[in-house]
Length: 239
Image 1 (cartoon, helix red, strand yellow):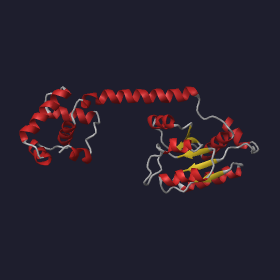
Image 2 (cartoon, one colour; image 1 turned 90 degrees about the vertical axis):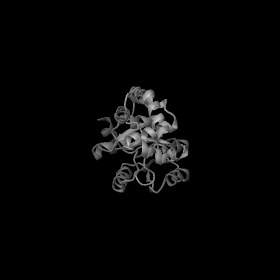
Image 3 (cartoon, rainbow, N blue to C red; image 1 turned 90 degrees about the horizontal axis):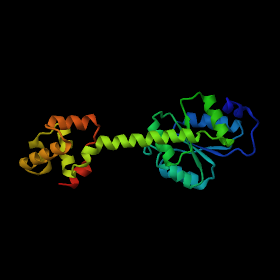
Image 4 (cartoon, rainbow, N blue to C red; image 1 turned 135 degrees about the vertical axis):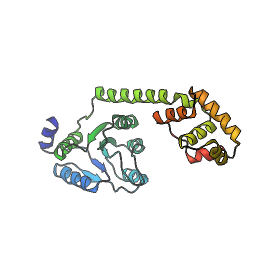
């Protein structure tokens, strides 16, 4: 209710300047038009590349960046842009349709100071942005702390989930990856340019380190824990 009231107030001369970094042109232009009507000085960044976005902030002063998390194209996630934009003097508010609290927590960890949901009604989103331009805070310290606690707990759980695989050498990870994709010892031998006996020796070591008794169990463990198969680059580095 406070946000709505703020949007109805007469424009203040102290409203902060807003820069919109959003790959959905219709939303960006609609917000820009409505914000200008509310008395907010606003500009929209053309989404071409990460360097293009940063150059925009280098060339123009801005108090607040409304940054979409998923910008699409060659940029993809804008997470890495958060500290770069902040270093140029702009506060970063995430304006995103993402609801995953861990991803949102990562944004806060990277330096974002607030979160806005694009799934909100347009008038509610507009009111919140006007409130931010007037100096309102979007996120309390308690809310921020909850996000950070969830992020830390998620990372602890992930470390525990992948701990058995950390004991594997680079070669053993490669071979486990081959096992997950259904390769036989003979196929692994041919692909890795090692003997079948060497492959089987590695498999035995993998089973011991994962504390399982069969290749099927090792593959099941890797699949159930969403273990990531080594990349092609890693595969060929150790040939």
